[in-house]
View 1: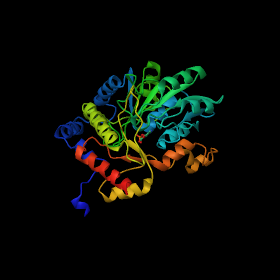
View 2: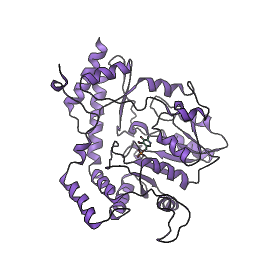
View 3: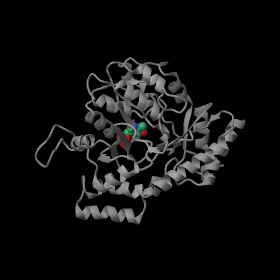
Length: 371
Ligand SMILES: Cc1ncc(COP(=O)(O)O)c(C=O)c1O
């Protein structure tokens, strides 16, 4: 059968998210009102995002990476400090810690892909200043345990919620547990903009003020700086795109959750496949739908031949990346993470897929393992 004759299942359908006259008109108005940087739409977006994420304040910045970097800077974390984080994240998590001048210290993860609190406790040293859990795949990390640990040891808790906008645990939004929540608006995320963008949430007025200054050169007013800062402002057009997405986020999340439930039902019991872990108290938003499988690379190739795009998030754990050798890490340090990296596969779960496309993916996986 040729590829043209079979059902295609794309990993992404971003064009369908953005292709709306209403959005085009809103963006066009920026070209004539010249409201380009930190304008009215940024302020409105920040108010709406704070409401959504259960925090008092939201500060728009120019990427999820900068959200992490600026949160660390705002908490005065830098040279000489250690931050305990997960080795199975996107490289930006550790990269932001290094950019702030601190040292990333990794701890292994659990079966849910999130930091294992016991491993975190064992990784804390007198130099540790913060714990930085990642809500990987859109599944909340075990926040009550991590929060208690941070409290006992006098540490800050910064959440990498880049993949988890709108996820909740025990009814509370991710990003609202720790001192700061860091979100990405990258086009691949559940709430995408047309370029780079990010948000930091906090319920501390002081931290919010520091973040607002840090993202804009440390300016206290037009002419005076309180301290040196950075240029990490959110563009007004991106804020307008983000507001357009916010109005649709509940539907996007619901669609992804429905696809996940369908995959769960179709794949449970297929030999060689482990479906994502579920917790009754967690509202998972399925930025990715990650299965663990036998013969992962062969399955990926087979699915590509059936018109199905899959991805691996992420094939090389951060502690095995070249610069982490200088930090003293090597193979075998985090066996759970390393075993998962060999077995994980992200199935397409974008909100525009149909039930028939999900069924096609599950059918092909079943067929692959029945041979
Ligand atoms: C877990 C995680 N942290 C941080 C980031 C960085 O976000 P951004 O690409 O917006 O800088 C990403 C996304 O790429 C991510 O998935």
